[in-house]
Length: 198
Image (cartoon, rainbow, N blue to C red; front, side, top):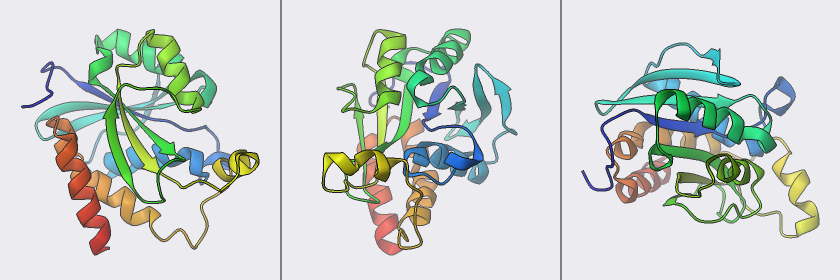
């Protein structure tokens, strides 16, 4: 398959903050995405491991480890690095699912490498691996319009008007076998089609 580097497991990391008070915040859409993948593809129950919560399953014939770091966003790299080291997973086989201010709500873009664009979870993963060469699944939450409002927007809860959220999470879970097969362009196209139909 194109882009495939190894036949070992992939590590899909949902970025977010632990605790019920953060559960519905925009910053936690990465947690929400991997939760939906775990549910829809019938992964094992979540268990405490690597300073995070871990579960595993198979998607498109590929073993997938899902990880939700419980270190808070700014120290996400500690959890991801520990899981990757134990399972001998290279950065190129790690995919970070995270909120993206610079994408319209409900839009998804996948890319490999690049900067952190002010995202503390990505920045700490770069620190932990001394490399930016992991994949990012960028889940659009929109920009509030002014930098002074960014923190409140990111740490604010999704609202009832955010009717795009559940269709997006479902579409990502349905389309994720394309990521397991290293077909990111097709994944983005599939998500776009599914969310248009919702």
